Length: 160
Image 1 (tube, rainbow, N blue to C red):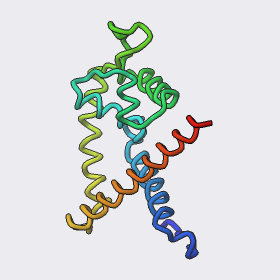
Image 2: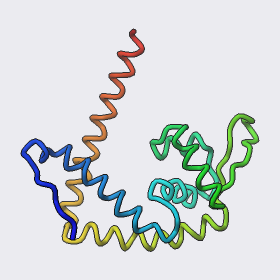
Image 3: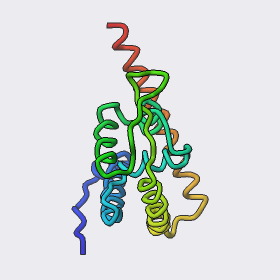
């Protein structure tokens, strides 16, 4: 039985709830993925590769996942060491790499998707379609607002 920490009114803000829920989602998903020896963070690029025909540029993978190049390199190093991906030189840019899903990576994605689908159903149990739609809309709005803040910060930095 897990204990809930007591909450104060300031702990109960929407942003705090989103943040703590995101952390809990990642922890639970990582635990569920332990039999595959990967984390949710590692599964995400594998799913993108699988849906994208099995090969994609590393820069594009960064853009699609929202990861920095340094973080993506770390993730890809782990996936390559496990035999799930290969890095191949980009024929058009010798400084860049194309990330290729290996047969072992494809098999892993197929197996993990079933687990993730079941996990998603458990997590969203009792939430009707209308509530899910509202939640998605609110999260998209928050994300858009964050994009706007980031854009303003970049503009301020450019003016310095």
